[in-house]
Each structure stands twice: as structure tokens, then as C-alpha cells.
Length: 121
Image (tube, rainbow, N blue to C red; front, side, top):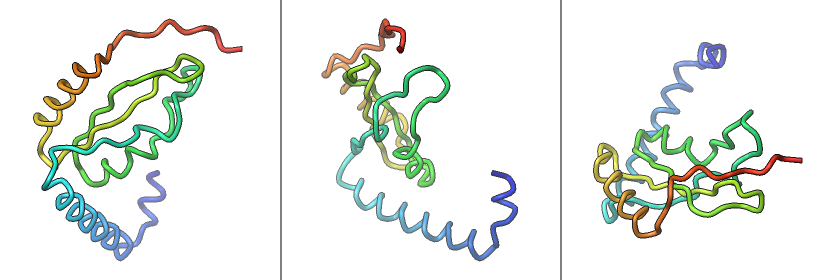
């Protein structure tokens, strides 16, 4: 990761920042009508075992755009592992996003109970 950063030219870095700024502006426009949007948390369910936490593909964009997100478990896959969705809020709206996530979790009766898992064959 560090080597990649060190090999990035100033022009490429500036272009990446400009692309991020354009994305932030587009997201701010979208979120001007909403407190939050709901998106998938991952492209698939949780992986078996504890060696990995899953694919971060669906969270990278929000990290780059510097907006708050929260992931809520909802449902289970065929292996009884949790599935989830994420809420994405406006820049600087962390408290509002937390309040909405609490309301949604209550409405959907989402439990934070840790599931009993069966050994993976």
C-alpha cells in the first residue's frame, strides 16, 4: 500500500482528489432530499470462518467520500450467517444517521444477538 502511494504521481493524486470532490458534490445533491440512503453492505453474505470479514467493495466509496455509514444486520443466509445493509448519511451528519439507524433497527426488530453457528464442513 505504501509503495503504491509513493509511486503515485502528483498529477494522478490531484486527479483522484478532483474525482472525489465531484462525487461528494453529486452525493450531497442526492442527499439534499434525504437524511440517508440504504445500500447493500456487501456483495454477498459473510464468509465462513474468522479469517476474513468479507468484501469491502460496497463501503469503499463512502470512505472515499468521507460520509458516515452504519451497517445493520438483517436476515441470515443458508449457512445461518448474517446478512446486512448499510445506511449512508450526509457529510457531518453522524448523530442524525445514528438516530435513524436506531429507529430502523427498532422498527425491523433487529437483534444484536450473536448467532449460534454450526461447524463448517
